[in-house]
Image (tube, rainbow over all chains, first blue to last red; front, side, top):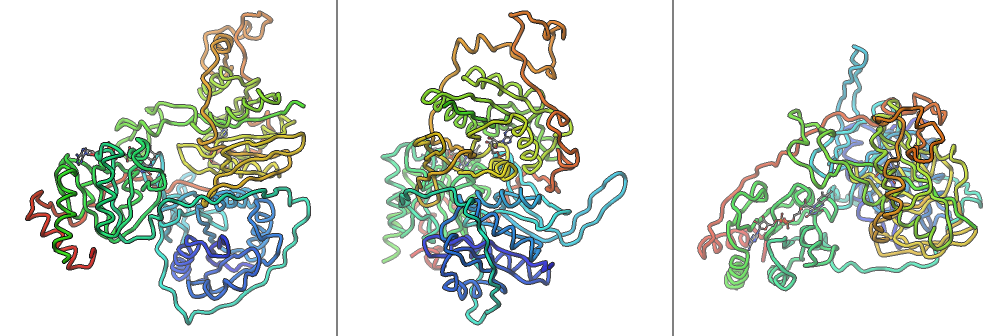
Length: 341
Length: 289
Ligand SMILES: Cc1cc2nc3c(=O)[nH]c(=O)nc-3n(C[C@H](O)[C@H](O)[C@H](O)COP(=O)(O)OP(=O)(O)OC[C@H]3O[C@@H](n4cnc5c(N)ncnc54)[C@H](O)[C@@H]3O)c2cc1C
Ligand SMILES: Nc1ncnc2c1ncn2[C@@H]1O[C@H](COP(=O)(O)O)[C@@H](O)[C@H]1O
């Protein structure tokens, strides 16, 4: 049954829908509208009806619901089998996955089994046409998914397509897409999927789960103050903490600052760190290498503080301050406190 | 028992040291101008295999698919302690995406035959996709654990590992055979052995450019260099339409150099007045405060 829909794989963690799944549902809804098809959500696990309302509100028209206590915890074999069966039966044209640890465990297995393409860590998804020259002839494809992602260590941006295979599949990192406004009046249809999971697929046993609380949730605040190598030392990073605290924001960092031990890696912003889009991003002592910019260039406003007037960060900053952060930051703190009163 | 371990390694361009020469004027990557290295997390994968060999006993076969000069990473694997190495190389494999790569690797693994463990890196730094491991496991119809940061215990028929997740760590116990992908947190790779380096420094694949006489390489001379087993698509019975470019669903439509968008940019004077006007502006627009 060729539904031609645009689907999002919904990830559940500890009884909660992962933020990235809602972000993708918004994107899927936009893509589905462009293609004039329905937006679907695939949901696996236990007590799934508790999630339906929220999924409808955030954009799903149809929920494919595979309720089975065996699927309570993620495991690659039973999940691959179940998702593949749903895809084969209903034939969506696009399936999106969050590029979480489990999403990146599952999506490639599904692609391998279905023999379709998969593009990892897309930063943008669009619908468009594609022409391919082959043996002198031009083959034209309409309404293909453009899967846009950085490549070669972030030095280039590639647009990938898989024109001949369905579904077209991609993973997207958390924080890259914006959650669509939810619509309380939105509702839809639930299709219950019959699962069939043989005992021999249950061969991984979870012995222990250790939660490591992140020291910071960079996406929890609308203000981020980030420090880089220019801060100079772990002690001096206090200056960054102080500015963040004063403004009511959280502390971010470049990878160089993390590698130098100024702060732990939970704070890293960028291609291999967290992707952020705060209202205000302050980059102090950060040169603005492409891998850093990849994670913060969508911020609403960017302030850059750097002694080097030619630092690339100034090219994307809304406000550039050429100067020593050791002088500029105390001034910012002092001025803010004065004017706030 | 002795474990049969297959380690998957890849030669990659050193993306950390990309220079301007690496980009062609049309914005595409000039791979030839990039230095190549052993994919960092594949060194961690090999190290985990070597640790198992030290502790329990193992036969380690290192497999790579790549151009003839990918033999480099196999020589390095021999220096580090691999027992055997296999180069999968054929023009037909060129321009493979992760699906076509996992197809060829899985056939080569079937040809190798016996294995208890397949160990790869979490991801390769040229594409950062982390797909080839799971895709290969699926083609072999075996279980997997990705993002492994520690092998806790190994018995005759199962393995206990710690895995890094988005929320911390989980300890998993699973049956063998299984495919694992290893993160850089797992270990610090050992340096190459001097003795093994001397033994294998001339190891060669017959498809590499070499000055040796073929007859000599096929002779019984005990001083002749170690010959790296090299397979093409026929050796592994691969269907051509599933290899390389023709076996790759994904195609590159366009590659662009990153052009920074110059937004509305204001230079703020580094003075009390400059900073005061900046803070006032942000306050009045409710960006801060
Ligand atoms: C595959 C790959 C992935 C990567 N992923 C990331 C990532 O996710 N995030 C990330 O950040 N990086 C990442 N990087 C690293 C990135 O390329 C840069 O090396 C890094 O961002 C540089 O950090 P920095 O700007 O703090 O340091 P530097 O480039 O050393 O810049 C320091 C800056 O501080 C300025 N400065 C010095 N003193 C002062 C002062 N007193 N006051 C004000 N300014 C001063 C200097 O002028 C300079 O511009 C990645 C690299 C690769 C290859
Ligand atoms: N051409 C290859 N030959 C052998 N192993 C590979 C190859 N490509 C990828 N791998 C393995 O798969 C892992 C993930 O690669 P990737 O999906 O490209 O990020 C690598 O760390 C290797 O262990």
